[in-house]
Length: 218
Ligand code: GRF
Image 1 (cartoon, rainbow, N blue to C red):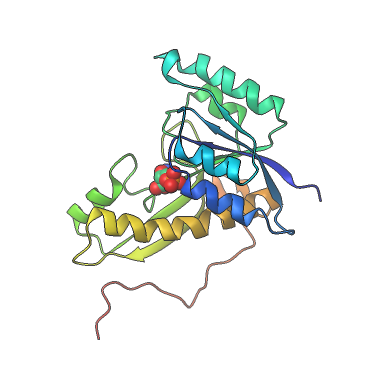
Image 2: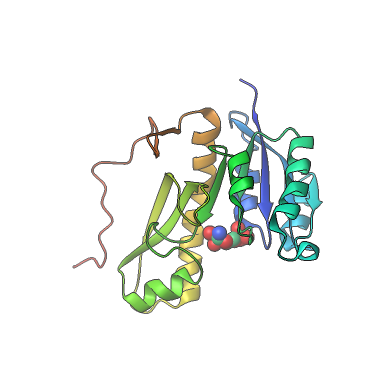
């Protein structure tokens, strides 16, 4: 089967982008990363993508000010010109309009650094620590107009430690992100993750006997 053509949208360092690029090198990976697009000129991820031999583009959002749709129309033109079939948001710091989201209905996924539907929005690690939760993590989900919502493709969890800071917790969650984003793209691109009645279903199963219990009593 032909590989699905994927664009990754970034605004920053692009560590999830790198994880996707690395995974897509595998011969049996069902997607190829054909474009990395940033709304911020000079985003660190752009250089990493170029080094990996991936075409990059920058469409600055700032000059468009509040006219989000005008920015997105330019974005859309670029994606269409590259025959993009799937979009991965990877630290893309833009709220998307319903118009743009509709163009990619069921074909755009995002990674969020929390176990949704908990901790939508920003500063997820700080908020999780302030609440004293014992398990935290990351979520890959299909994008819908409502922010940080949409059918969940995959989640990964980590234990929260008493001495965690937002930075140490973020680092541990990021490790999980780099595992679940490539795996999620594999599922979505192969067609083995489908939308059904507003949820994402797949033949891939969790491990029914595994449980992450935190804290562990010894
Ligand atoms: C990640 O924590 C991701 O979950 C969030 O933005 C951050 C992007 O980091 N959406 P990176 O640019 O992939 O390193």
